[in-house]
Image (cartoon, rainbow, N blue to C red):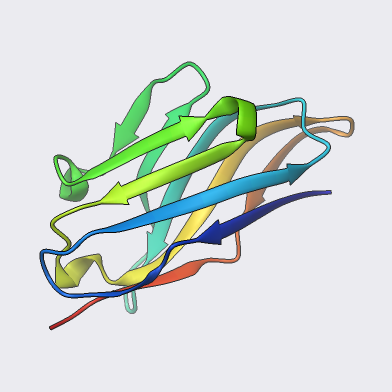
Length: 120
């Protein structure tokens, strides 16, 4: 079994910062892509940012210049540094690991989600 454990969510005022972390554990040979999605009330889940094992990154237009994704491949960990947070960033943030290479083949794995609330 492969599990993703997220941490770092919470409440912050507009303009503040938070850092999310996600660690993958289990029988893992490699992980191609790790990233973050978010789901806000009344909206569809959307990709926030992801990063391949080779270092390529992809960001939603709404977070470019404010959020930074980084990754430690050796530790199977991905981070999301969120700066200049806005109320519209309020959502449950989910960690995602795509094409996780395991003894059972390739898997896609999701974390349980962590709530980020931006409010004054």
